[in-house]
Image: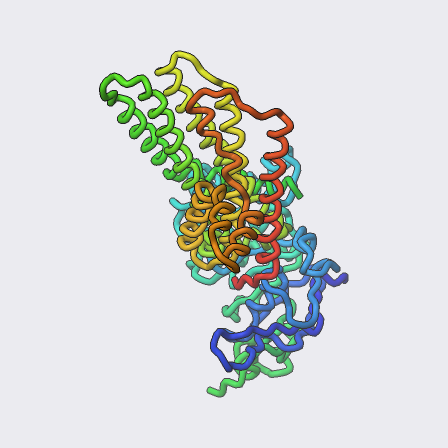
Length: 247
Length: 261
């Protein structure tokens, strides 16, 4: 299996605004790789460095040291993001546009031919069940509908790698089930999914491999079944052991 | 590359047409001009010139407000509403984003200018019964280039300053000061002592001379434009140079700025 995502010796440091405070190390010497077709869970408590790592992968933050690659391209280059779909934790879309206009805009960004745009938009809206609301401004959508627009935009370019930042956070049980279904469907289609989540039961169900980060460092990485066997408990208990929580 | 910037510009344009700013400013300008035009004290024939001057001043003010406020909020609003994250997670470089924002604001200013100058032409024609179309066209074109410089300058301000309101106020003051005082800066410098004299002289040569784009007097007095196509190209090149400089500076500041999702 080819490597889709590779992180080498990644370090991210932040300077705090307070004078005399030491530099904050958000990520320390992180090495990680995700292979094609894997569903990879990126876990850790709040402040562990998950979002910072995702920010580096998406080009929002430059690493202090080390490199990250998507499809063999350095993440500093916009071309690295040509074959990825990204779903942020919360919905951040242009509320003055309709869902159809938003998806058309993203089609243009991906330089999808005009003749293909209509069918892609139809398919994405059908998948997230927003066909009837396609002409309505996003600002009139409910939270769940906005989250579904997010999912549609993440899939509009038919990505080979989907990066999801806590995709089920704030969703009702139906919404969660829908996201899980979509992840499962993408997995069956041979797509790669890299996602962070605090829902460890969900991670255990859908993920092939996981990595657990704590205080900016990679503490453990491996197949879900291997980890649960090695620690002789479920993934949630593995997670608690790794982050040093004793009940 | 340009295709992505055009797409971003299209979204900016759509946002501007769906906001009420432009319509409010246009209605305000129209109401003020028509109200002033309906008053003709002592049947003075100079009233037409006065009316034209007033209308053009209002147009300059309104378009400056549109250019500055629209450009000032573009990048900060993307960050504040966090729409920048799904956008930059796609194969878009920060230069394409800056350029797209510029294209959108520049086109929006062009549309606003067209509507305003059309209104001005109607007002002029209704009073003078003749229309100096060439003058109106030159005034429109130069005014649009002025907008390009102001939009680019404001975009630079928006990535340097943290609050859009502070940036908008500063850019509005800077543009209007340069417009009205820029031409006198050299004379003011000569009346000063060193080192202020040198500072003002450097300012005179470094700042964009926005007054080059203001031919209101020619339009008001119906003088034929005293410049050739070559002069027009030169002034356009001058505007393009400053616009490029401001855009490249905006990109240089913005390209390494960390964004935390």
